[in-house]
Structures are given as structure tokens and as C-alpha cells.
Image (cartoon, rainbow, N blue to C red; front, side, top):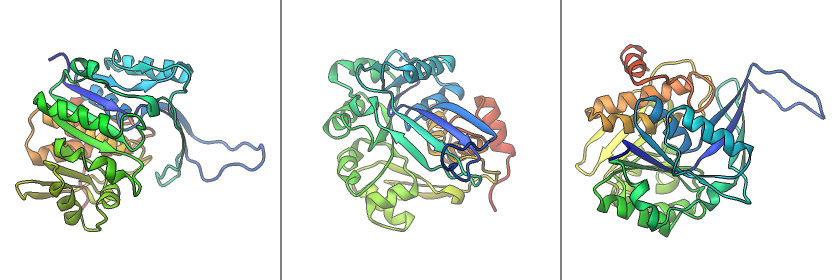
Length: 314
């Protein structure tokens, strides 16, 4: 196959600043330490990280025909991502977010919906966008056109072609479960945060959330638990928790996307489950150590070194 992974879904330009404790009153100016632009979103952040971790990665999403799109596409190409499947849509802006990162790493966001709402994958695109052994769909919940029957057809076709499907979502609310539930029978690794899993399942305990998703058809669940690490459950009844790394958090933007990327890379390298969870965890930890969704990750080799050397939470 032409690519190691095809990453389909939400592509956003993030504008981040830190540390922000308050927005200045009137037209006043405050000074901060750092401002960055990054390619982000539940697909964009993931595809940059899979590329930095050494995978031949295809980006499948949509941008507008504005200056933000120019920067997103240039940055994808700079990191070696194949952007040939990115759609440029006229008449709509590129989706973008302004994040004011607090000193503790929290990041209240101001988001402008744009091209991602109009992005779709039609059947004539399947041969191209499914030309990889691993297919990641990221951003369900903010993909207005793709969400629903179009996503179901896409993942059905991916499984028909024997692909491994990984999945993540964003912006869950009381309606999201109706979009996600028809997808679950076609998902091999369902990878939300525990907060998102609770929203979907209407349950509180990690085990109950996993049971709800597995009973609805997912092959396996991999929940990110923040400082409590990660949790894995599958149809065989296996349950496993992996500790988080003990790091100084700068910014939590993109940690879930980095976890997804790390887990995808682990699948590519056929790592065992314990190592896969640790590799995904350290990928997220490296991103949390800097500003933006791709901070801290430099290469596969450096990430392996970090996995084996950084301390774990006790």
C-alpha cells in the first residue's frame, strides 16, 4: 500500500498563546511568553504526530482558500505528510481556534467552524483514502457533512477492505451518541477521553463506559484518563490500566491526538499491548510538555528513549 496510515477528519489551524491569566480590559495589552501556530484537530494533530514518529501518512480533510489554508498545507508538507487528499473548498474559511493557555495547562478555546463542516468522503474517493492498512477517523462531532451515514459507509468500506480502524471524536454532547453508535461495529480501537466516554455511555465508572461501547460493537476501547493514565478493554474481557508519565505540564492541547498517534504507530510496529499503551502515553506526555498539539515529539527513536527513561506517576 502507498501509505502506512490514512488520517481522515477534522483539520484546524490553532493559534496558541501562553501563559494567559486574563484578557486585558478595553484595548490594553498584556505580554505573554509564547505564541505558536499549529496544525491541529482530531485528524490534523494526529497526522502531524504520526509523520514525526516515522509513518508514511496521508492527510484527508478540508481547508478553505484562505491564508490559513496555505499555512496548514505548507506545514503538512514540511513534516512529510502527503496532503494530496486535502480538499480546498471555496467560499468557506479554514476551521481555526484561538487557545488562551492558562498557567496550569488548561486551554479555553474560541473556535470558528469552517471547511471541516463541509468536508465529505464520497465513494469515488475510497480507493485513494483507504489505501493504507490503518484508517483513523478523527473529529466526529464537528464534521457536519461527514458525520452520520457518510461516516458509516466509509468505515464499513474500510472494514470490507480489511483495514484496521481507529477512531476519536470531539465536542461530545447529548446528541453525539446517536452519531457514534452506528459506527462502533466498524471500529477496532475506540479512543476517546474518559470524559467523552462518560458523555456517550451515560455512565461514570471506566468499566461501565467500556462495557457500553463494547456491547454496542466496538472491538476494543482505549480511554485516556488524564493524570490517571490510560485504560484498555476489549471483547475478550481483557482490562488493563497504564500509568501516566510524571511530567511538568505546559499545555494539554493535542494530548489526545498525540495519544492516538502513538497508539497508531505502536500498531504499525506490532508492539505488544503494554508497550503500545506506554508508547501512546509518552507521546501524549511529550506534547503536554510544550505549547501546541505537536510539541515535544521529534522522532520515533527519541520517543522510545523517553518511554524508557521518563518517570511514571506513582
